[in-house]
Image (tube, rainbow, N blue to C red; front, side, top):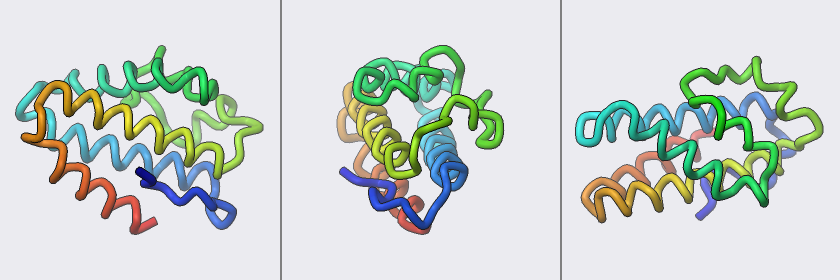
Length: 124
């Protein structure tokens, strides 16, 4: 499932990163009342571990919670990564987050949240 545009030539790494962070914050906002505040951090870190082989630049997410990441502060981590590569990696990361969330809750939260996140990211 594509969330962020694969053809990201018209957007910057910062814009892609900010869009992703907004999406994860939305997931966190919706999931926290049911599963606790730490759940999204664990989901993101676990997802990063699973996609790190295909997207090594996402390895920093396995060591630092996404809540500690500011788009302007991670440019060193993303040097040499094109916006399209970043969008592809973050799409895969979101897919893994939703897979983990589905394991925890079944279809209780995922379908509606998935639609909401997809709609938010299409606004980019």
